[in-house]
Image 1: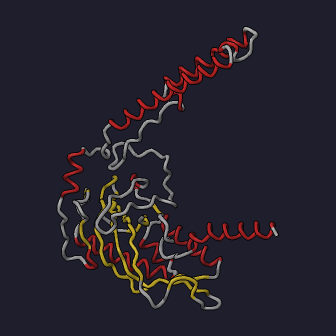
Image 2 (image 1 turned 90 degrees about the horizontal axis):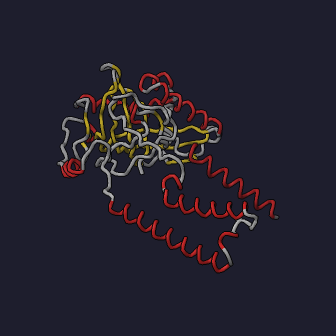
Image 3 (image 1 turned 180 degrees about the vertical axis):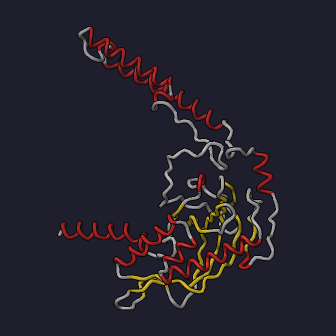
Length: 324
Protein backbone atom coordinates (compact mmCIF):
# COMPACT_ATOMS: atom_id res chain seq x y z
CA UNK A 1 0.00 0.00 0.00
CA UNK A 2 2.82 2.38 0.89
CA UNK A 3 4.61 1.56 -2.37
CA UNK A 4 1.48 2.44 -4.31
CA UNK A 5 1.13 5.76 -2.48
CA UNK A 6 4.78 6.61 -3.11
CA UNK A 7 4.45 5.72 -6.78
CA UNK A 8 1.35 7.88 -7.21
CA UNK A 9 3.06 10.78 -5.43
CA UNK A 10 6.10 10.52 -7.70
CA UNK A 11 3.87 10.31 -10.77
CA UNK A 12 1.94 13.42 -9.71
CA UNK A 13 5.18 15.30 -9.09
CA UNK A 14 6.50 14.35 -12.53
CA UNK A 15 3.29 15.50 -14.15
CA UNK A 16 3.51 18.79 -12.27
CA UNK A 17 7.08 19.35 -13.48
CA UNK A 18 6.32 18.53 -17.10
CA UNK A 19 3.01 20.39 -17.33
CA UNK A 20 4.38 23.94 -17.65
CA UNK A 21 6.55 22.94 -20.59
CA UNK A 22 3.54 21.64 -22.47
CA UNK A 23 0.61 23.68 -21.24
CA UNK A 24 -0.53 26.75 -23.13
CA UNK A 25 2.05 26.24 -25.85
CA UNK A 26 1.28 29.37 -27.85
CA UNK A 27 4.28 31.10 -29.47
CA UNK A 28 6.95 31.16 -26.81
CA UNK A 29 5.41 28.32 -24.80
CA UNK A 30 4.31 30.78 -22.08
CA UNK A 31 7.94 30.92 -20.97
CA UNK A 32 10.59 33.63 -21.14
CA UNK A 33 12.73 32.74 -24.13
CA UNK A 34 15.27 34.34 -26.42
CA UNK A 35 17.92 37.03 -26.20
CA UNK A 36 17.99 40.78 -25.66
CA UNK A 37 21.62 41.36 -26.52
CA UNK A 38 23.66 42.73 -23.61
CA UNK A 39 20.41 43.20 -21.65
CA UNK A 40 19.25 39.58 -21.84
CA UNK A 41 19.48 39.14 -18.08
CA UNK A 42 18.36 42.67 -17.16
CA UNK A 43 14.68 43.21 -16.45
CA UNK A 44 12.99 45.63 -18.87
CA UNK A 45 11.59 48.78 -17.25
CA UNK A 46 7.92 48.56 -16.17
CA UNK A 47 5.28 50.19 -18.36
CA UNK A 48 1.58 50.99 -18.12
CA UNK A 49 0.83 47.82 -20.07
CA UNK A 50 3.21 45.64 -18.04
CA UNK A 51 3.70 47.22 -14.59
CA UNK A 52 4.81 43.91 -13.08
CA UNK A 53 8.45 42.83 -13.42
CA UNK A 54 9.22 40.54 -16.31
CA UNK A 55 10.18 36.97 -15.53
CA UNK A 56 13.88 36.28 -16.17
CA UNK A 57 14.94 34.32 -19.23
CA UNK A 58 14.33 30.60 -18.86
CA UNK A 59 15.59 29.63 -22.32
CA UNK A 60 18.36 31.61 -23.98
CA UNK A 61 21.44 30.99 -26.11
CA UNK A 62 23.10 33.95 -24.36
CA UNK A 63 25.24 32.78 -21.47
CA UNK A 64 24.70 34.78 -18.24
CA UNK A 65 28.39 34.51 -17.37
CA UNK A 66 29.52 35.94 -20.70
CA UNK A 67 30.87 39.46 -20.12
CA UNK A 68 29.17 42.26 -22.01
CA UNK A 69 31.19 44.08 -24.66
CA UNK A 70 33.08 46.96 -23.14
CA UNK A 71 31.21 50.19 -23.65
CA UNK A 72 28.12 48.46 -25.04
CA UNK A 73 24.88 50.32 -24.22
CA UNK A 74 23.12 48.77 -21.29
CA UNK A 75 26.12 46.73 -20.22
CA UNK A 76 25.71 46.94 -16.44
CA UNK A 77 28.81 46.81 -14.32
CA UNK A 78 28.90 43.59 -12.36
CA UNK A 79 29.64 44.05 -8.65
CA UNK A 80 32.85 42.42 -7.54
CA UNK A 81 32.30 39.23 -5.60
CA UNK A 82 33.04 39.52 -1.93
CA UNK A 83 36.31 37.68 -1.23
CA UNK A 84 36.03 34.65 0.98
CA UNK A 85 33.11 33.55 3.06
CA UNK A 86 31.42 34.71 6.26
CA UNK A 87 34.58 35.21 8.31
CA UNK A 88 36.31 37.12 5.51
CA UNK A 89 33.36 39.54 5.47
CA UNK A 90 33.27 39.68 9.30
CA UNK A 91 36.84 40.01 10.61
CA UNK A 92 35.72 40.53 14.23
CA UNK A 93 34.01 37.15 14.29
CA UNK A 94 37.05 35.64 12.60
CA UNK A 95 39.26 37.01 15.37
CA UNK A 96 37.05 35.61 18.10
CA UNK A 97 36.88 32.17 16.52
CA UNK A 98 40.62 32.28 15.88
CA UNK A 99 41.28 33.00 19.54
CA UNK A 100 39.01 30.14 20.63
CA UNK A 101 40.71 27.74 18.21
CA UNK A 102 44.13 28.91 19.32
CA UNK A 103 43.30 28.26 22.97
CA UNK A 104 42.11 24.77 22.13
CA UNK A 105 45.22 23.94 20.11
CA UNK A 106 47.44 25.23 22.94
CA UNK A 107 45.59 22.99 25.36
CA UNK A 108 46.13 19.99 23.10
CA UNK A 109 49.87 20.70 22.80
CA UNK A 110 50.11 21.07 26.58
CA UNK A 111 48.52 17.65 27.01
CA UNK A 112 45.43 18.85 28.83
CA UNK A 113 42.81 18.42 26.11
CA UNK A 114 41.26 20.80 23.64
CA UNK A 115 39.34 22.85 26.26
CA UNK A 116 41.89 22.57 29.06
CA UNK A 117 42.82 26.21 28.71
CA UNK A 118 39.30 27.24 29.64
CA UNK A 119 39.27 25.73 33.10
CA UNK A 120 36.22 24.22 34.75
CA UNK A 121 32.73 23.80 33.38
CA UNK A 122 31.77 27.14 34.95
CA UNK A 123 34.68 28.78 33.19
CA UNK A 124 33.60 27.32 29.88
CA UNK A 125 30.01 28.51 30.36
CA UNK A 126 31.25 31.98 31.34
CA UNK A 127 33.46 32.16 28.30
CA UNK A 128 30.63 31.07 25.99
CA UNK A 129 28.33 33.68 27.57
CA UNK A 130 30.90 36.40 26.92
CA UNK A 131 31.33 35.13 23.37
CA UNK A 132 27.55 35.26 22.79
CA UNK A 133 27.37 38.82 24.16
CA UNK A 134 30.19 40.00 21.92
CA UNK A 135 28.66 38.29 18.88
CA UNK A 136 25.32 39.92 19.65
CA UNK A 137 26.93 43.34 19.81
CA UNK A 138 28.70 42.72 16.49
CA UNK A 139 25.50 41.68 14.73
CA UNK A 140 23.62 44.64 16.27
CA UNK A 141 26.26 47.03 14.92
CA UNK A 142 26.05 45.41 11.49
CA UNK A 143 22.24 45.72 11.48
CA UNK A 144 22.41 49.41 12.41
CA UNK A 145 24.99 50.00 9.70
CA UNK A 146 22.76 48.33 7.06
CA UNK A 147 19.73 50.35 8.20
CA UNK A 148 21.49 53.69 7.79
CA UNK A 149 23.21 52.76 4.56
CA UNK A 150 21.55 54.58 1.69
CA UNK A 151 19.55 52.50 -0.77
CA UNK A 152 21.47 52.55 -4.10
CA UNK A 153 19.78 53.79 -7.26
CA UNK A 154 19.86 51.79 -10.50
CA UNK A 155 23.20 51.86 -12.28
CA UNK A 156 23.90 55.26 -13.73
CA UNK A 157 20.65 56.85 -12.45
CA UNK A 158 20.80 59.22 -9.42
CA UNK A 159 17.85 59.36 -7.05
CA UNK A 160 16.76 62.76 -8.40
CA UNK A 161 16.57 61.33 -11.90
CA UNK A 162 14.54 58.41 -10.60
CA UNK A 163 11.97 60.81 -9.13
CA UNK A 164 11.87 62.85 -12.32
CA UNK A 165 11.35 59.73 -14.41
CA UNK A 166 8.55 58.49 -12.15
CA UNK A 167 6.83 61.90 -12.22
CA UNK A 168 7.18 62.35 -16.00
CA UNK A 169 3.81 62.53 -17.81
CA UNK A 170 2.76 59.73 -20.06
CA UNK A 171 3.17 60.68 -23.72
CA UNK A 172 0.71 59.13 -26.14
CA UNK A 173 1.91 57.96 -29.55
CA UNK A 174 -0.73 58.60 -32.16
CA UNK A 175 -1.33 56.88 -35.47
CA UNK A 176 -0.65 53.33 -34.26
CA UNK A 177 -3.16 50.52 -34.46
CA UNK A 178 -3.96 48.50 -31.37
CA UNK A 179 -3.27 51.33 -28.93
CA UNK A 180 0.52 51.37 -28.93
CA UNK A 181 1.71 54.10 -26.57
CA UNK A 182 4.63 55.14 -24.48
CA UNK A 183 4.94 53.84 -20.93
CA UNK A 184 4.10 55.53 -17.61
CA UNK A 185 7.28 57.57 -17.94
CA UNK A 186 9.41 58.49 -20.91
CA UNK A 187 11.15 55.22 -21.86
CA UNK A 188 14.83 55.04 -22.67
CA UNK A 189 14.75 55.30 -26.46
CA UNK A 190 18.23 55.43 -27.94
CA UNK A 191 16.98 54.38 -31.36
CA UNK A 192 14.21 56.86 -32.09
CA UNK A 193 11.24 54.49 -32.51
CA UNK A 194 8.68 55.87 -34.96
CA UNK A 195 5.04 55.11 -35.77
CA UNK A 196 6.12 52.80 -38.61
CA UNK A 197 8.16 50.75 -36.13
CA UNK A 198 5.16 50.27 -33.83
CA UNK A 199 3.09 49.18 -36.80
CA UNK A 200 5.79 46.65 -37.66
CA UNK A 201 5.74 45.28 -34.10
CA UNK A 202 1.96 44.84 -34.21
CA UNK A 203 2.11 43.24 -37.65
CA UNK A 204 4.79 40.80 -36.47
CA UNK A 205 2.64 39.85 -33.48
CA UNK A 206 -0.26 38.86 -35.74
CA UNK A 207 1.87 37.16 -38.41
CA UNK A 208 3.93 35.13 -35.92
CA UNK A 209 0.78 33.77 -34.27
CA UNK A 210 -0.66 32.88 -37.67
CA UNK A 211 2.55 31.15 -38.75
CA UNK A 212 2.68 29.31 -35.42
CA UNK A 213 -0.82 27.91 -35.93
CA UNK A 214 0.05 26.76 -39.47
CA UNK A 215 3.34 25.29 -38.22
CA UNK A 216 4.95 27.34 -40.99
CA UNK A 217 8.62 27.21 -40.02
CA UNK A 218 9.64 29.05 -43.19
CA UNK A 219 7.47 32.04 -42.25
CA UNK A 220 8.70 31.94 -38.65
CA UNK A 221 12.28 31.98 -39.95
CA UNK A 222 11.49 35.21 -41.78
CA UNK A 223 9.83 36.80 -38.73
CA UNK A 224 12.13 35.68 -35.90
CA UNK A 225 15.77 35.05 -35.10
CA UNK A 226 17.22 31.54 -35.61
CA UNK A 227 17.32 31.15 -31.83
CA UNK A 228 13.58 31.82 -31.46
CA UNK A 229 12.80 29.56 -34.42
CA UNK A 230 14.64 26.74 -32.65
CA UNK A 231 12.56 27.30 -29.52
CA UNK A 232 9.42 27.16 -31.69
CA UNK A 233 10.66 23.83 -33.08
CA UNK A 234 11.24 22.53 -29.55
CA UNK A 235 7.69 23.51 -28.57
CA UNK A 236 6.29 21.78 -31.66
CA UNK A 237 8.22 18.63 -30.71
CA UNK A 238 6.90 18.74 -27.12
CA UNK A 239 3.33 19.00 -28.41
CA UNK A 240 3.83 16.27 -31.01
CA UNK A 241 5.15 13.92 -28.33
CA UNK A 242 1.71 14.10 -26.72
CA UNK A 243 -0.19 14.04 -30.00
CA UNK A 244 -1.38 17.62 -29.50
CA UNK A 245 -1.62 20.71 -31.67
CA UNK A 246 -1.93 24.30 -30.45
CA UNK A 247 -3.64 27.01 -32.47
CA UNK A 248 -4.37 30.69 -32.04
CA UNK A 249 -6.60 32.98 -34.06
CA UNK A 250 -8.11 36.47 -34.10
CA UNK A 251 -5.08 37.97 -32.38
CA UNK A 252 -5.66 41.62 -31.52
CA UNK A 253 -3.33 44.06 -29.82
CA UNK A 254 -5.38 45.80 -27.12
CA UNK A 255 -2.64 47.97 -25.64
CA UNK A 256 1.08 48.34 -25.98
CA UNK A 257 3.92 50.62 -25.02
CA UNK A 258 7.67 50.82 -25.38
CA UNK A 259 9.77 49.64 -22.46
CA UNK A 260 13.17 50.50 -23.90
CA UNK A 261 15.08 50.73 -27.18
CA UNK A 262 18.83 50.73 -27.60
CA UNK A 263 21.64 50.00 -30.05
CA UNK A 264 24.54 47.57 -29.89
CA UNK A 265 26.83 48.15 -32.81
CA UNK A 266 24.89 47.47 -36.04
CA UNK A 267 21.91 46.05 -34.13
CA UNK A 268 18.93 47.97 -32.80
CA UNK A 269 16.77 46.42 -30.07
CA UNK A 270 13.29 47.39 -28.93
CA UNK A 271 11.37 45.76 -26.07
CA UNK A 272 7.63 46.37 -26.23
CA UNK A 273 4.98 45.45 -23.66
CA UNK A 274 1.87 44.11 -25.39
CA UNK A 275 -1.51 43.19 -23.98
CA UNK A 276 -3.28 41.06 -26.55
CA UNK A 277 -6.58 39.25 -26.83
CA UNK A 278 -6.88 36.05 -28.81
CA UNK A 279 -8.52 32.67 -29.09
CA UNK A 280 -6.07 30.01 -27.93
CA UNK A 281 -6.67 26.28 -27.66
CA UNK A 282 -4.94 22.90 -27.87
CA UNK A 283 -6.53 19.75 -29.22
CA UNK A 284 -5.72 16.07 -29.42
CA UNK A 285 -4.91 15.16 -33.02
CA UNK A 286 -6.33 11.63 -32.72
CA UNK A 287 -9.58 12.30 -30.93
CA UNK A 288 -10.09 15.98 -31.71
CA UNK A 289 -10.81 16.61 -28.02
CA UNK A 290 -9.87 20.00 -26.59
CA UNK A 291 -7.12 19.48 -24.03
CA UNK A 292 -6.48 23.14 -23.14
CA UNK A 293 -8.11 26.48 -23.82
CA UNK A 294 -11.40 27.14 -25.59
CA UNK A 295 -11.84 27.62 -29.36
CA UNK A 296 -14.95 29.71 -28.69
CA UNK A 297 -13.66 32.11 -26.03
CA UNK A 298 -11.27 35.04 -26.16
CA UNK A 299 -8.60 35.40 -23.53
CA UNK A 300 -6.13 38.14 -22.71
CA UNK A 301 -2.45 37.93 -21.92
CA UNK A 302 0.40 40.40 -21.49
CA UNK A 303 3.91 39.69 -22.70
CA UNK A 304 7.10 41.62 -23.42
CA UNK A 305 8.34 41.08 -26.96
CA UNK A 306 11.83 42.16 -27.99
CA UNK A 307 12.58 42.86 -31.63
CA UNK A 308 15.95 43.32 -33.30
CA UNK A 309 17.03 44.74 -36.64
CA UNK A 310 20.45 44.83 -38.27
CA UNK A 311 21.63 48.00 -40.01
CA UNK A 312 18.15 49.36 -40.43
CA UNK A 313 16.68 46.15 -41.84
CA UNK A 314 13.30 44.64 -40.92
CA UNK A 315 12.41 44.03 -37.30
CA UNK A 316 12.38 40.36 -36.25
CA UNK A 317 11.39 38.75 -32.96
CA UNK A 318 14.34 37.95 -30.69
CA UNK A 319 12.69 37.29 -27.30
CA UNK A 320 9.35 36.79 -25.52
CA UNK A 321 9.14 37.38 -21.77
CA UNK A 322 6.26 36.66 -19.43
CA UNK A 323 5.18 39.13 -16.76
CA UNK A 324 4.49 38.67 -13.08
